[in-house]
Length: 451
Image (tube, rainbow, N blue to C red; front, side, top):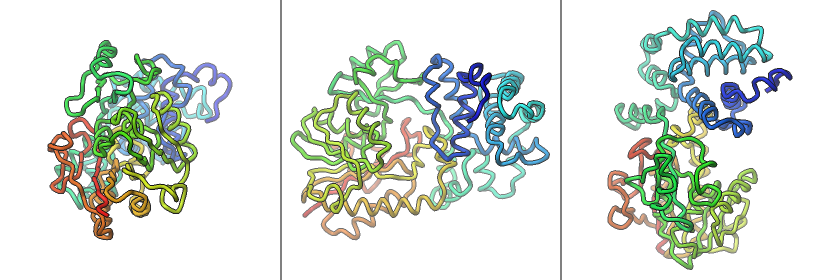
């Protein structure tokens, strides 16, 4: 985003500006939601402020826009991305944070003074003064379509809510919508190759760390915040990983001496966990399709000091970079819509389209069929997604088994896997609703190649 010299020196490290820019990168450029690198130079409190503004704005984006629209005589030109970002983030602060209305308006106007949109200071001041007083409930109640009203009330795209209502009860959909708009607990996985959970809890005692009651090796940090400054980060004592994701690697039950494929490995959390579960005595091939993600994968494995991992970039499958390989076990955390992790990545709501899910289902099926050929008879494959869409989950697995008679489901169970029973389906799959037991939405099935 272009700024003049005075802006660069006076406001470059303004947390509110960094939040606006993060929001604009999503709405204008369709990029994932993330703060710019400059955020690392902020004090922890200011970085947390920028993070909350950016992520909170994306959670309530459509409702904020509806409120702002009700206060504007004519639509804002499409090219005014920065102006729209300032309005959205300021209104979020006034409505959902402990920021007085006057302060939120003042900070927004001050930000504009040193930007190319400085001519709109009076406009922003007037619009926000009206917007902070709007009753959003009245805007929602005016909508005659109940699905449209529900989508706006919880700030989700209509197509997504409509799709959920077609398959789930209204109560369950409302619970999902509410969970998606909550701030999740920061969750760590203890790297047991380096330290035990009790010792890590002791090191993090001053950060109010607690042991997760439902997941071995998981630690919860209710206060959230950045992790780079936590004790043990540089030493590789832990990684950031939701509880649901931590269960997925456990279902593979890796054993010493096995040759294991992590088929879609970046950023490396599950690769590292597989190694830890086998005390570092397995050989893992970690494959990542996208070159841009390889460095992050390698950096994470290096920090965690994970042994015997071979990283390969490219497509998985018998006719690609794994043509001559056969594996004892395979973990496929498949590319998916991400609808189970909206509470951590609220931009997913606005970046996804209905057609994306249909395309992802085809991609998942192709990958699953391909890697099935490079698993040894008697081997186990875990198919997992961070999606709540049945087409990507239960239906995907059912279709695969129907077309592969040499395969069968090997049920995940409380007795064998020690997983909470409420997270299991009647078929023995792992299925978590967003927010259930303070976990992300997730799905996993364990499949066995019989011959």
